[in-house]
Length: 263
Image 1 (cartoon, rainbow, N blue to C red):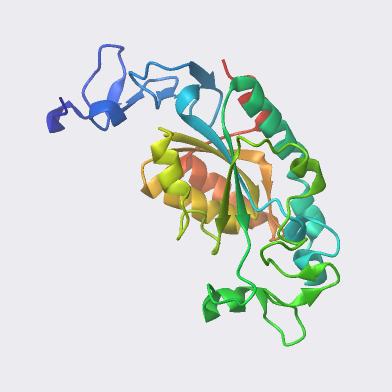
Image 2 (cartoon, rainbow, N blue to C red):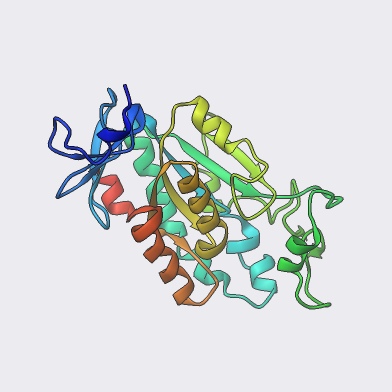
Protein backbone atom coordinates (compact mmCIF):
# COMPACT_ATOMS: atom_id res chain seq x y z
CA UNK A 1 0.00 0.00 0.00
CA UNK A 2 1.27 3.47 -0.87
CA UNK A 3 1.67 5.90 2.00
CA UNK A 4 2.83 9.48 1.56
CA UNK A 5 5.27 9.20 4.44
CA UNK A 6 7.08 6.32 2.70
CA UNK A 7 8.53 8.68 0.08
CA UNK A 8 12.20 9.48 0.81
CA UNK A 9 12.31 6.69 3.40
CA UNK A 10 14.82 3.85 3.26
CA UNK A 11 13.62 0.71 1.50
CA UNK A 12 14.64 -2.85 2.29
CA UNK A 13 17.33 -2.76 -0.41
CA UNK A 14 18.92 0.32 1.17
CA UNK A 15 17.70 2.75 -1.46
CA UNK A 16 15.62 5.85 -0.86
CA UNK A 17 12.08 5.63 -2.20
CA UNK A 18 11.08 8.07 -4.95
CA UNK A 19 7.36 7.80 -5.63
CA UNK A 20 4.99 5.24 -4.21
CA UNK A 21 3.35 1.94 -4.95
CA UNK A 22 4.46 -0.08 -7.97
CA UNK A 23 5.68 3.07 -9.72
CA UNK A 24 8.41 3.92 -7.25
CA UNK A 25 12.07 4.36 -8.07
CA UNK A 26 14.93 3.68 -5.65
CA UNK A 27 17.80 6.14 -5.37
CA UNK A 28 21.11 4.57 -4.29
CA UNK A 29 24.52 6.16 -3.89
CA UNK A 30 25.82 4.56 -7.08
CA UNK A 31 22.71 4.03 -9.26
CA UNK A 32 19.01 4.67 -9.69
CA UNK A 33 16.63 1.71 -9.90
CA UNK A 34 13.65 2.73 -12.05
CA UNK A 35 12.18 -0.77 -11.97
CA UNK A 36 12.07 -1.37 -8.22
CA UNK A 37 10.16 -4.55 -7.48
CA UNK A 38 9.61 -5.41 -11.15
CA UNK A 39 9.67 -9.17 -11.79
CA UNK A 40 11.14 -8.81 -15.31
CA UNK A 41 14.65 -8.92 -16.76
CA UNK A 42 16.64 -6.34 -14.87
CA UNK A 43 19.69 -4.71 -16.45
CA UNK A 44 22.07 -1.92 -15.48
CA UNK A 45 22.90 0.76 -18.05
CA UNK A 46 25.85 3.02 -17.36
CA UNK A 47 24.52 6.56 -17.64
CA UNK A 48 24.62 10.15 -16.41
CA UNK A 49 24.07 11.48 -13.83
CA UNK A 50 23.98 7.96 -12.36
CA UNK A 51 23.78 4.47 -13.83
CA UNK A 52 20.19 3.32 -14.22
CA UNK A 53 18.71 -0.12 -13.55
CA UNK A 54 15.79 -0.91 -15.84
CA UNK A 55 13.38 -3.75 -16.46
CA UNK A 56 14.06 -4.75 -20.08
CA UNK A 57 10.56 -6.23 -20.29
CA UNK A 58 9.08 -2.76 -19.72
CA UNK A 59 11.59 -0.80 -21.82
CA UNK A 60 11.31 0.41 -25.43
CA UNK A 61 13.54 2.16 -27.94
CA UNK A 62 11.90 5.17 -29.59
CA UNK A 63 13.46 6.62 -32.76
CA UNK A 64 12.07 9.86 -34.11
CA UNK A 65 12.04 11.33 -37.61
CA UNK A 66 15.02 9.53 -39.14
CA UNK A 67 13.55 10.45 -42.51
CA UNK A 68 14.78 11.58 -45.90
CA UNK A 69 13.43 15.11 -45.56
CA UNK A 70 15.69 15.66 -42.56
CA UNK A 71 18.67 13.42 -43.24
CA UNK A 72 19.10 12.92 -47.00
CA UNK A 73 20.47 15.09 -49.81
CA UNK A 74 17.62 16.68 -51.69
CA UNK A 75 15.33 16.59 -48.65
CA UNK A 76 13.73 19.57 -46.94
CA UNK A 77 16.64 20.26 -44.55
CA UNK A 78 19.15 20.19 -47.40
CA UNK A 79 17.03 22.28 -49.77
CA UNK A 80 16.33 24.83 -47.04
CA UNK A 81 20.03 25.58 -46.67
CA UNK A 82 20.44 23.72 -43.37
CA UNK A 83 23.05 21.07 -42.68
CA UNK A 84 21.47 17.69 -43.41
CA UNK A 85 24.88 16.05 -43.01
CA UNK A 86 24.78 16.93 -39.31
CA UNK A 87 21.52 14.98 -39.02
CA UNK A 88 23.12 12.03 -40.77
CA UNK A 89 25.63 11.78 -37.93
CA UNK A 90 22.93 10.03 -35.86
CA UNK A 91 22.42 7.22 -38.40
CA UNK A 92 25.29 4.83 -37.44
CA UNK A 93 24.39 5.01 -33.75
CA UNK A 94 20.67 4.64 -34.51
CA UNK A 95 21.51 1.45 -36.41
CA UNK A 96 23.56 0.31 -33.43
CA UNK A 97 20.66 1.11 -31.08
CA UNK A 98 18.23 -0.99 -33.12
CA UNK A 99 20.62 -3.93 -33.20
CA UNK A 100 21.19 -3.64 -29.45
CA UNK A 101 17.44 -3.52 -28.84
CA UNK A 102 16.98 -6.69 -30.91
CA UNK A 103 19.74 -8.43 -28.94
CA UNK A 104 18.26 -7.37 -25.60
CA UNK A 105 14.67 -8.17 -26.55
CA UNK A 106 13.58 -4.51 -26.32
CA UNK A 107 10.78 -3.42 -28.69
CA UNK A 108 11.47 -0.73 -31.29
CA UNK A 109 9.05 2.12 -31.93
CA UNK A 110 9.43 4.23 -35.06
CA UNK A 111 7.87 7.69 -34.88
CA UNK A 112 7.44 9.50 -38.19
CA UNK A 113 6.37 13.00 -39.10
CA UNK A 114 4.04 13.13 -42.07
CA UNK A 115 0.90 15.07 -42.85
CA UNK A 116 -2.30 14.99 -44.84
CA UNK A 117 -1.82 16.05 -48.42
CA UNK A 118 -4.52 18.72 -47.94
CA UNK A 119 -2.67 20.03 -44.82
CA UNK A 120 -5.90 20.19 -42.82
CA UNK A 121 -4.14 18.78 -39.78
CA UNK A 122 -1.74 21.76 -39.60
CA UNK A 123 -2.15 25.24 -38.20
CA UNK A 124 -0.30 28.40 -39.16
CA UNK A 125 2.38 28.16 -36.40
CA UNK A 126 3.54 24.74 -37.63
CA UNK A 127 3.45 25.82 -41.27
CA UNK A 128 5.57 28.84 -40.36
CA UNK A 129 8.18 26.54 -38.78
CA UNK A 130 8.90 25.14 -42.24
CA UNK A 131 8.43 28.21 -44.41
CA UNK A 132 10.32 31.34 -43.35
CA UNK A 133 10.78 32.74 -46.85
CA UNK A 134 8.47 33.02 -49.82
CA UNK A 135 10.80 30.93 -51.96
CA UNK A 136 11.30 28.19 -49.34
CA UNK A 137 9.34 24.98 -49.87
CA UNK A 138 7.05 24.35 -46.90
CA UNK A 139 5.20 21.25 -45.74
CA UNK A 140 3.22 19.78 -48.62
CA UNK A 141 5.04 21.79 -51.28
CA UNK A 142 7.03 20.09 -54.01
CA UNK A 143 10.73 19.35 -54.05
CA UNK A 144 12.57 17.16 -56.54
CA UNK A 145 11.55 13.95 -54.74
CA UNK A 146 7.96 14.94 -53.99
CA UNK A 147 6.01 16.95 -51.41
CA UNK A 148 7.62 17.85 -48.09
CA UNK A 149 6.65 15.63 -45.11
CA UNK A 150 3.52 14.32 -46.75
CA UNK A 151 2.02 10.87 -46.15
CA UNK A 152 3.44 8.36 -48.63
CA UNK A 153 6.19 10.69 -49.82
CA UNK A 154 9.91 10.02 -50.19
CA UNK A 155 10.65 12.76 -47.67
CA UNK A 156 8.55 11.09 -44.98
CA UNK A 157 10.25 7.71 -45.52
CA UNK A 158 12.98 6.32 -43.25
CA UNK A 159 16.53 6.65 -44.51
CA UNK A 160 17.80 3.55 -46.32
CA UNK A 161 20.13 2.45 -43.52
CA UNK A 162 17.23 2.15 -41.07
CA UNK A 163 14.39 1.15 -43.38
CA UNK A 164 16.01 -2.23 -43.93
CA UNK A 165 16.02 -2.84 -40.16
CA UNK A 166 12.26 -2.44 -39.65
CA UNK A 167 10.43 -5.61 -38.64
CA UNK A 168 6.70 -6.38 -38.89
CA UNK A 169 6.37 -6.52 -35.11
CA UNK A 170 7.75 -3.00 -34.65
CA UNK A 171 5.29 -0.27 -33.69
CA UNK A 172 5.05 2.61 -36.17
CA UNK A 173 3.50 5.88 -34.99
CA UNK A 174 2.73 8.82 -37.30
CA UNK A 175 2.83 12.25 -35.70
CA UNK A 176 1.64 15.66 -36.80
CA UNK A 177 3.66 18.03 -34.65
CA UNK A 178 7.20 17.98 -33.27
CA UNK A 179 6.06 16.21 -30.09
CA UNK A 180 5.56 12.47 -30.65
CA UNK A 181 2.83 12.28 -28.01
CA UNK A 182 0.65 15.14 -29.26
CA UNK A 183 -2.53 13.80 -30.94
CA UNK A 184 -0.97 10.35 -31.52
CA UNK A 185 -1.55 6.88 -30.07
CA UNK A 186 2.01 6.61 -28.71
CA UNK A 187 1.06 6.93 -25.03
CA UNK A 188 -1.82 4.48 -25.41
CA UNK A 189 0.43 1.87 -27.04
CA UNK A 190 3.11 2.25 -24.39
CA UNK A 191 0.71 1.95 -21.46
CA UNK A 192 -1.19 -0.96 -23.03
CA UNK A 193 2.10 -2.83 -23.42
CA UNK A 194 3.30 -2.02 -19.90
CA UNK A 195 6.23 0.14 -21.01
CA UNK A 196 7.65 2.46 -18.37
CA UNK A 197 11.19 3.21 -19.59
CA UNK A 198 12.00 4.85 -22.93
CA UNK A 199 15.34 5.16 -24.70
CA UNK A 200 15.30 7.98 -27.26
CA UNK A 201 17.17 8.70 -30.48
CA UNK A 202 16.47 10.63 -33.66
CA UNK A 203 16.43 14.12 -35.12
CA UNK A 204 16.36 16.97 -34.47
CA UNK A 205 17.69 16.68 -30.92
CA UNK A 206 16.50 20.14 -29.89
CA UNK A 207 13.09 19.97 -31.55
CA UNK A 208 11.22 16.70 -32.11
CA UNK A 209 13.40 14.64 -29.79
CA UNK A 210 13.48 17.12 -26.92
CA UNK A 211 9.74 17.89 -26.97
CA UNK A 212 8.94 14.18 -26.96
CA UNK A 213 11.39 13.45 -24.15
CA UNK A 214 9.95 16.31 -22.11
CA UNK A 215 6.40 15.07 -22.61
CA UNK A 216 7.43 11.53 -21.66
CA UNK A 217 8.93 12.96 -18.46
CA UNK A 218 5.70 14.87 -17.77
CA UNK A 219 3.84 11.56 -18.13
CA UNK A 220 6.16 9.86 -15.59
CA UNK A 221 8.10 7.66 -17.98
CA UNK A 222 11.76 7.03 -17.18
CA UNK A 223 13.62 8.63 -20.08
CA UNK A 224 17.14 7.85 -21.33
CA UNK A 225 18.57 9.97 -24.15
CA UNK A 226 21.00 8.13 -26.43
CA UNK A 227 23.31 11.04 -27.11
CA UNK A 228 25.15 9.54 -30.08
CA UNK A 229 21.89 8.44 -31.73
CA UNK A 230 20.56 11.99 -31.80
CA UNK A 231 21.66 14.87 -34.00
CA UNK A 232 20.51 18.26 -35.19
CA UNK A 233 21.04 20.73 -38.00
CA UNK A 234 20.91 23.50 -35.39
CA UNK A 235 24.05 24.97 -33.77
CA UNK A 236 25.86 22.61 -31.41
CA UNK A 237 24.80 24.49 -28.29
CA UNK A 238 21.18 23.51 -28.99
CA UNK A 239 21.97 19.81 -28.55
CA UNK A 240 24.21 20.61 -25.59
CA UNK A 241 21.25 22.19 -23.80
CA UNK A 242 19.06 19.13 -24.42
CA UNK A 243 21.76 16.79 -23.12
CA UNK A 244 22.17 18.96 -20.01
CA UNK A 245 18.43 18.99 -19.30
CA UNK A 246 18.10 15.28 -20.01
CA UNK A 247 20.64 14.62 -17.25
CA UNK A 248 19.53 17.26 -14.78
CA UNK A 249 15.75 17.24 -15.21
CA UNK A 250 14.13 14.77 -17.58
CA UNK A 251 15.97 11.55 -16.80
CA UNK A 252 19.31 10.13 -17.89
CA UNK A 253 21.76 10.13 -20.79
CA UNK A 254 23.91 7.35 -22.19
CA UNK A 255 25.17 6.20 -25.58
CA UNK A 256 24.47 3.21 -27.79
CA UNK A 257 27.66 1.39 -26.79
CA UNK A 258 26.65 1.41 -23.13
CA UNK A 259 23.08 0.47 -24.04
CA UNK A 260 24.37 -2.51 -26.00
CA UNK A 261 26.48 -3.54 -22.99
CA UNK A 262 23.54 -3.44 -20.56
CA UNK A 263 23.57 -6.30 -18.14
